[in-house]
Image 1 (spheres, helix red, strand yellow):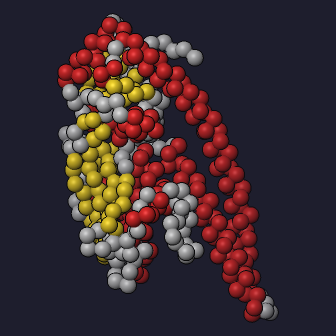
Image 2 (image 1 turned 30 degrees about the horizontal axis):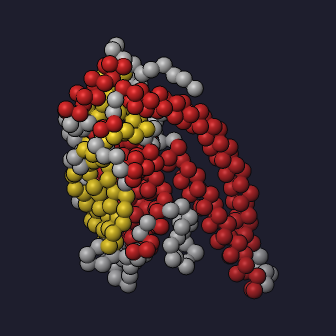
Image 3 (image 1 turned 90 degrees about the vertical axis):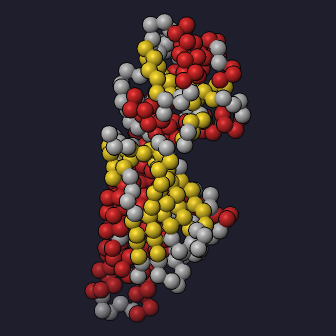
Length: 362
């Protein structure tokens, strides 16, 4: 599989000397190629709006943001998801290379090893991986279409079963009393299965088909999520505080879903005290970290990673939930070029933190 050598490169690196050195190498290999430079991840994202970019080279270590977050954003933006991306770093640590490749980089080079031979190999390899990714995406799109149609076909008879069980419970006076709990269970399990189908589709769709990113007011997204959960909040006697949050680029409905799921979790996993939920943010260079803090039962140390795994409900022994809520949240955040983690709150409870690209006002 061979593709034409790229004729427009984008270099994203905060070190001007390193950009000049890489630019010189590329000029020697492709004298007529256009080379665009960006000194920060945010500037890089702006340059990526240019559809003529054919290959991206990203520094791993930049202030307040490593290149992996930027790779995530590139991979999950429709216009750039198939671009060849090469991570070039000042280290040759295997762990860094593995992280870069796992998160979407096509190739990895240490700055100390960059020469025309290694760079040429990395570019051609990245081009081949990009083509394979395009082919895989086409097959995945066909599979997703099948899954959505299959889900619709599954839910139609399921909704009929749930509806008939409900009718039987309320219209058959002669139904033996001992039979009524079984009908209630049929209805409950049917609704549970329908919800599971919806959540499985949502889990798949968050990564595979993100909409074109637009400016998103995170304060408005959090407020809308709280408004949608107003009945649950009032029933639990919860109090939700939302500080002024900045803007980011993304999918408003998906980010609203992040806040919805995190608020729901804080209400569900509460102590006897009324839930206190505080949403705040802190700017970190080109990124923003959003914290959703609660006073609930907390998350044990051994579960803080597991809770983000699909269908893993940790040590929960109740019937509510499918173990997909936090998995969906994690996938949404990653499609927006960020990451999410959980840590204990100093006063008890949990803090769910996630990062996003900060959209600064012009």
